[in-house]
Structures are given as structure tokens and as C-alpha cells.
Image (cartoon, rainbow, N blue to C red):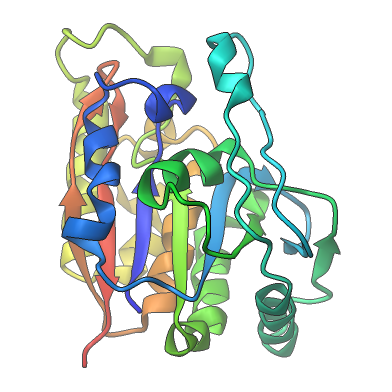
Length: 263
């Protein structure tokens, strides 16, 4: 299994045909990944904890509406994908063995919008088991890269490892869609693309010092570190591929990446 980082943008991605990334995600099974995974490990920017935590759900996942002020129909959407308790236990085992423990678990937590919004477009049948793993944004990029490396064996078991965040994420500077792309956002986005495609993993793990406009593009690392999990899980010789690129609001890049390890 390849690993992926998806820029999920606004929650309205799931209902707004005007967001270009919507059509990209709807074409996922036909144009990006024809093979159905046995289970999905989702690492979303919207579950940030002190210690790595998995949701160990026995039945269908609840749909978490962790956003405010959106159209009322957003709060009626459901994505009842089955939980993946066996996968959650395997994630705990791999991370504990690699020194990330003790790994915590939550048995009543469902999927936040960083998980269910893209999955509703990618796998609308909601029939693939999903386990969610939290980020620890205070621990930085390299922590998440190493966590991904520990999870790499899951790929051999048919598990799709997905990071969900955003290539750029500063909500203070969003603007109208018809305005020019902010230079700082474009500079960071271009740097990220070149670093991923050229396998500059050390630079990516030190993006705050290496990348232009890193601080304004990501005032807090939560929306970028899911990329580092996907990157680490793909293996040291993996190559990055830009599989989608679009913008909204002058500053929000929907750049999304596939990471493929050598055969």
C-alpha cells in the first residue's frame, strides 16, 4: 500500500461543488487507488493529544461535528464506517514496541471532520473499517515521521495510511477565491512540493527552519504533521508525487501527495 497526505480544507468540501478538490476526492477509486484497502488508519489534524491515542471502536464510528457556523445540512451528514479494533490494537503494539508508549485508547470517540469529510468523498459507501490515530503537535515533525516509520508494517497488511491536514493553514489570512494567491502561501507550497518530490526528508522534518514562510503558513504544526506520518510510513527511499493541486481563499492549498516505496 502506498501512503497519502490529503489536504482536506474546509468542512464544506463535502457539499460544495465549487471547491476543486471535491472532484479529485470523488475520483479517488477510479483514478488514484483502484485497490480497496482492508482497513484505513486515519491521522487527522483535528485530534491533537499529549500522548498518541487510537479510537478503539467495536461498532460503527460516530460522526463528530467539530465545527461551528456552517450550513445546517452539514450537521445531518453521517459517515458510519465500521470501527477497526484489531487495527487499533496493532497500532498500539507497533508504537509501544517502538518507544512511543504508553499508547492510549478511546472507545467512544468517532471520526472528526478531518477524517470523515474526505472519506465520505473517497469511500462514500462507508464500508471500510477506520481507525483514527491522534497527532501530538507539540512534539514536532520528526516525532511524527518516526511514528510513521513504526507503522510501516501495516502497509503489508493492506492498511491504507492516510494523513489529513493542509499544505498551508492560516485561517487569519483567508480571502476571496477570485483574489491572487498570497506570495507567502505560494512560496511555502512550492517548497513543500519540491521537498516531497525530491525526497528531502531531513528538510521536511526541519521545515520550520528550512522552508520559506513556514511560520505564517503553519502558525501551529497540527495541519502539516499528518504528512510526516504518511512520509515516514512509506519508507526511507519512498518518492513523493503531487496527485492534486488547487487553491481556495487565496491562502488555502489543497496540495495532496502519494508516497511510494521502491518495489
